[in-house]
Structure formats: structure tokens, C-alpha cells
Image 1 (cartoon, rainbow, N blue to C red):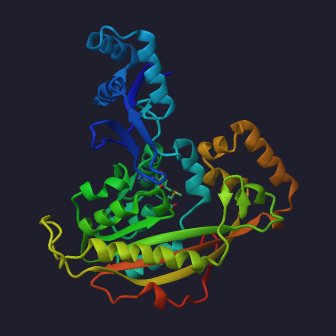
Image 2 (spheres, rainbow, N blue to C red; image 1 turned 135 degrees about the vertical axis):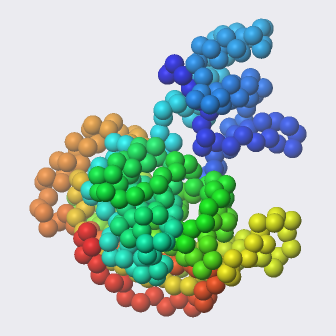
Image 3 (cartoon, helix red, strand yellow; image 1 turned 180 degrees about the horizontal axis):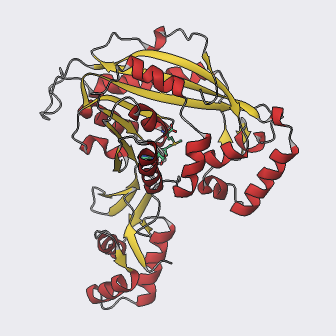
Length: 383
Ligand SMILES: C[S@@+](CC[C@H](N)C(=O)[O-])C[C@H]1O[C@@H](n2cnc3c(N)ncnc32)[C@H](O)[C@@H]1O
């Protein structure tokens, strides 16, 4: 156990109608941890800025409840630690950490062709204010920063935020960063002409995300969602971990468009519900009419053949994926390397499909049911 702990910002403190306290995770499956009175106090103590020394918390608790035993309090701390309600102050909040950043930047580059389409559809020029959400180590944000010096990225992983800042400096680009959960976007009070989220919407509370977009998207502004899907053939040496059926989960049957349409519909419905200035509400921000409602207007499909090898796997699979498999890190990577080395180079390819969903204030509406998917545009690697 670390000497110092802090209350995890990935859990929000809440209270049931009968006054019992619990903390709840922000994202499906919304894990709940019910707090005893003792744990409620511990959560408050460790909630101090920068956390608290475990020994100091134990002493404080013994002063608050002199009848309590040190062992019982230590046990409560250990339980909260195991549930990740308490974490080390420097702990990563995201499953993605600093150790993956270099591989991510080098081997999961954001396709420049899709960045160019975003820039084109969003009318990005030197004055455009851009916010890239759940930006990872900055792959898309840095592509857009080539076109405007007003790019900000918001990301939960401390390691990725640091890596993105360093990469921006190294490439001579301007990049602002916000180290915060995008589930708290509604608490950002900004105004952006283009907002983007790539390969991450499934990690977020999309109701909170859409509320935040409604609040921050400027008049005429565009919001882009990039959704991706990976395909490797069953004979690919990494299909046991990156294929359609793996211990990490099964890919849904059906075409890529079958997955894109409901996603587009869901986000469109959320905008219809939440960006509805005609509905009488008390919130004055709600009535802030800025150039029309946000509506879904277009979907573009892309297909990219690319190497799917150890480099890609290192940019894709985090330690938490590996521990979900019940394997130790070193053994997992040794085995994966052995499989890749045994394959011939031509077998180490796969396909990434991408959908670019475009929502815009005041745009002409495209209903999900009316979307006729066109053949995906082929893009090269890195594109
Ligand atoms: C697959 S990566 C996508 C990165 C980048 N957008 C891209 O397309 O390459 C998912 C990212 O979402 C971030 N993420 C997950 N939950 C988040 C949250 N609540 N707030 C902000 N970022 C989050 C992760 O830390 C990770 O960097």
C-alpha cells in the first residue's frame, strides 16, 4: 500500500434518499461502492487536495472515533483501495499511461486524410478554435494544430497529456491541454468552432458529453465523432487477441455501417433532446440560442489497410487489458512477439475502418434512417 492516498476523481460522491452515502463510477457499468460512516469520513480525509498520508489518516480517524481500532480502520482503507475508490496520488486515472504514449504516437497515427476532411468540413483556418476530446497523446489534436494555433485537447490520462505537450514542443506546434475527464465538459465554459472526439466516445458518459458540446460549441460550429473498427483475418497471428472473438470480448456481427448508424442516431437524439431551446427550462444557458440547433448532417466512411504487428499491439493494448486476461505483462508480450516473429510479413496486415460523423449548428439534417452508406474511401497508411 502506498504511504499516501487520495480519493479517486473517477468516482462521484452521492447519497441515497435514506441518507446512505455511496460513490459511483461515471461510465457504464456505473460501479457503486457503498460507504460506511467510517469510509465516508475516510473518503473526505483522502479527498483533500493532493490526498493524505495513510498514517495521518489513521491518527485522524482514531481521534474522531476513539473506540475504533487501528486494524479496523486500516482494513477499511484497504477495501477502498482494492475497489480503486482510493488511489495513489500520482496514479493514472486512465487505463492508458505514459508508457504507451510513444508507441501510440508512432504506431497509431491519426490518418492525415481524415484530419484533412475534418479541417475541410469544419472550415478550419488560422483563427479556428478547436477542442479535441479524449485526445490520447494528441494524435488528432497535433494534426489540427498544423492548421491553427488555437487547438486545445482534453484528456484523462496524465501521461498522455504530458506526452502530447512534449510532442507539440518537439514539432514546434501550439497546443493547450486540459487534464480532466470529458464527462465534466459541461463545466468548461469555452467557445469552440470545431470540437472532435476520436475512438473514445464509448469510454464516456455520452449524455454528459453532449451537454458539454451544447454548452461549448460556437455559432455555426461543427462537432465530429470518429468511430473506428479493426478487422484481422482468423489466420492473422494476433487474431487470438485482436480478432472477432477474443477473451477481451466479441465483435458484434454485421457490417461496419450497421454499427455506425445506431451510434449516429443515438448522438442525434441526444442533441435533439438536450439542445432544444424551445423547451421551457429554468437554466438560462439552455436558452442561449447560438446559430441554430446542433444536428447530424453527414457520415463519411474510410478504410485503411495497415500493419497489425507487435508495434500496433503495444499502442493498442494497455496493462489493464493484459490483467483482464489474467496474464502477467512480461509473459504476454513474449508470447505475442514469438507469434509475430513466426509469421511472414504479408500476414501481419489488417484493416481499420473509420466513420466520420459530422454534427453542426444550424446544418441541414440527415436522419439516421435516410443515410445510404457509400463505398468507404480507401486511405493509405499512415494516410
Ligand atoms: C483509444 S484512445 C483515443 C485517443 C485519440 N483520440 C485517437 O483517436 O487516437 C481513448 C482515449 O480516451 C481517453 N479517455 C477515456 N476516458 C476518458 C474520460 N473520461 N475523459 C477524458 N479522456 C478519456 C483515454 O485516456 C484514451 O487516451
